[in-house]
Image 1 (cartoon, rainbow, N blue to C red):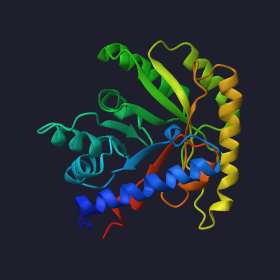
Image 2: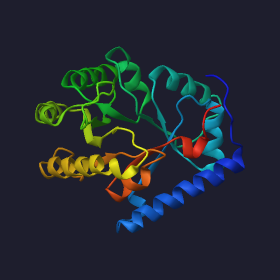
Image 3: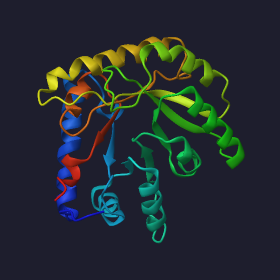
Length: 243
């Protein structure tokens, strides 16, 4: 995984405390309860030992991985001396040929974007005996060629597929917006995703719940929370820049 500057336990505690304090402050600015927002620590490219330190020293339990294969190795390594209560989030694009492993490994998949993939996951859940798999739909609001996601016009047919599924359950929406140094330029994407969540939530797309919003990373998670984020994906602010 290459060399990296690894914070120690006290560093991780301090960094996690700062991020959680900023999450709380952003939620309160928006008139929200901070408990509505969950921190997903983005552990991609970092070693299993750092995940363990983040869990044991900083109390973090939700970790986000981009690659199924990398996550599999970490999860297996951590089984040697298990850390209780870890939840694994797939936050990178899911390739169809990795779908079976994803069903076995992840608690929440943030990046569903095609009906075919939903149907594949439903079939694999049946074959693997998994009673429920929770997912989010990744929405493409910017049309960036290098990024995945369903367009707004594709959402109706996608939610029709979810209605036929007994095991794969859509719990909300996710976005990976364009990167801007000025976070105010990102805010309209967060606001639009919230609008879509409200629109589809009113139609019952997320069951009895209003629906999750996975949006915001290290440089813009406070703005995302002010716009309604319930899951923020934070890596650099916790683990530091890679060497």
